Amino acid sequence: MDNEQVGLYTLDEALESLGFGKFQAFVLAYAGLGWFAEAMEIMILSFIGQAVKSEWGLSSSQESLLSTIVFAGMVIGAYGWGTISDTYGRRTGFLTISIVTSGAGFLSTFSPNYLSLVILRGFVGFGLGGTSVFLSWFLEFVPASSRGMWMIVFSTFWTFGSIFEATLVWIVMAKLNWRWVLALSSVPSFVLLFLYGVAPESPRYLCMKGRTGDALRILEKIASVNRTKVPAGVLISSRSTDKAEESTPSEDRIPLLPSLSKSSMQSKLGLSSFFMLFSSKLIKTTALLWVLLFGDSFSYYGIILLTSKLSSGESGCFPTFQSSGYLLGDSLYVNAFITSIAELPGLFLSALLVDRVGRKQTMSIMFGLAFIFLLPLLTRQSAVLTTCLLFGARMNAMATFTVASIYAPELYPTSVRTTGAGVASAVGRIGGMVCPLVSVALVNACHQTEAIAIYLAVIVVSLVCIQLFPYDTKGRELSDTAS
Image (cartoon, rainbow, N blue to C red; front, side, top):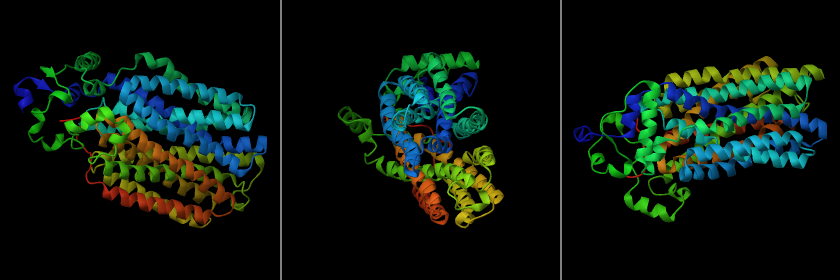
């Protein structure tokens, strides 16, 4: 191609040449720890609500608010952290996210009353709203040819975080109390803060800002750690590749989106990155992602909460699950642990599919299977069968949620990637805010059939939405700012 004749190479060509090595493994570990921390804080919602309700004599609506306030904070935080990282860099986002999440999470341990706990958990949610920054950051270090598989590997940190939290609660709640669970669950966020100084900036973000020299230094460091070589020639940023990109790209290097025009980039000076999401080239992508991630979040978190409600039998509606107080709590933790492990085969299956059949087909298959597993729960089933069905539903819902989370940042150009993915994630969190009202309120009121029917309807809408996306992102390069 022309780039080779004049000795120029793009960031994507450099990443392909450098491969996935020890440097990316460190990036994976740091970014993955961010998701590990979020998974722990989210899994708390399945256990803390009931413990606090018993200790402080809360109503069902007050118990639901402890979950809803976290998701409300995440909705607000997702936009704020995405804008910060797109404007000031991914590392700045890491620092502020870690400070807020670790600080509020630890302080909530000492909450003297219900109101203070709600406020502090809201701040925890605000910090958690920025975890999409970790995903976008890792995405920007991975070669396009293997991006799908490595993003699935990245998502296993969420699953292991869920499993670890279920294990932690199982051990700690029996001997101590919910305050110790909150304190220990904030530790990963403190580790992120401690390691912040060694986290590199995204070279793609630097190129987008025109700082190709800084980006090259990071590429050279990657080459040194991976024991490979940076391609010969000159690294070009998206601002200087107009002519090179006029030629038709090869099929396996098609940009993910038509690049934004120069006039759009100039208008960006007067508009925030948020409003760029509603430009003529991005509005369809934005709208479809919002609906999809709402459905994903509603279904996934709803299944988590259903596990705790249908396992505890505290509503008195399901005699099958009634037992002594000790066995009741123990059964809850065991079932939460089992259904958390369910995510591992789901991730394995999606890893096999995502780079073979593409993002859209993988989501359609996995969400369809989640529908099938939830369908029998329209009527009351035995304890063992209910756990098995929730196992299968969570396995497939997590796989769909993971692929959708990969799909979202791939669809946006670098200039608005964390903002676009963050806002889409925020809209998805609204699904997380609403689902406690379904899982907790309806099941407590003995309306299991109605609750499950709502989840099934949301899955159907999400499946239709997936089919409306005009293209897949399998094997395609990330787009930057303008051509």
